[in-house]
Image 1 (cartoon, rainbow, N blue to C red):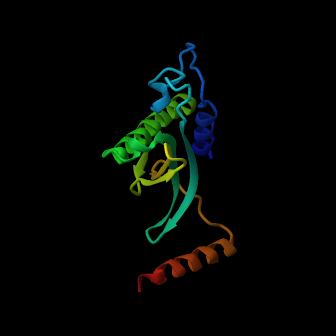
Image 2: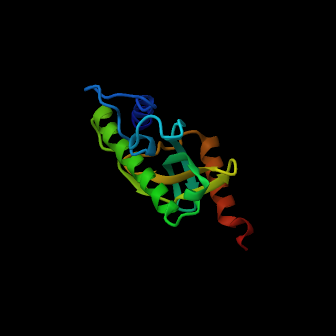
Image 3: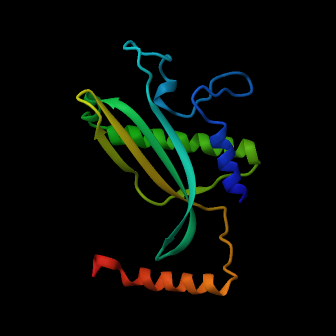
Length: 172
C-alpha cells in the first residue's frame, strides 16, 4: 500500500501549472514545458501523463504492475515524420524518471521497476490538421511483495486462473 500511496501522492502533486517548493514550474518531461505557455497560433500544447498501479497475472505468476500513459495532440505532419515512436518513448521515459525522483522525495524509498512490455502507441486523426497520440508502457514493480492468499476461496480462484491461463486461448 505504501507504494500505491506514494505514487498517488506524486501524481496529485503533478498537474499543469504545478510549482515546486522554490516556486519554479515542475518539469516532468512534457512537450508543453519546453515552449512558452502559448504558441504562435494561440493554442496550448495538450500533453500529459498519468501513472496507475494494477495487478498483472500471467503464466509467469502475478505481480504489481505500474502503467505509465502519455497523451498528446500533435499536428498531422508531425505524426507522419519518422521517429515519432522514439519521441513518445522518450516522453514516457522522462515521466518515469520524474515519477521515481518525486517518489523518493515523498516516501524516502526507491521505486524500482523493470520494463515488462514494449510501448503500445495509438495515433488517431482528430481533424485534417491535428492528431491525438496515446501510448502506454507497462513496468513490473520490483520492490513490492504480493500478499499471500489466506482465504480458501482466493486460493481456489488463483488455481483456476492458472489452469485457464495454461490453456493458451487461441494459440492452439
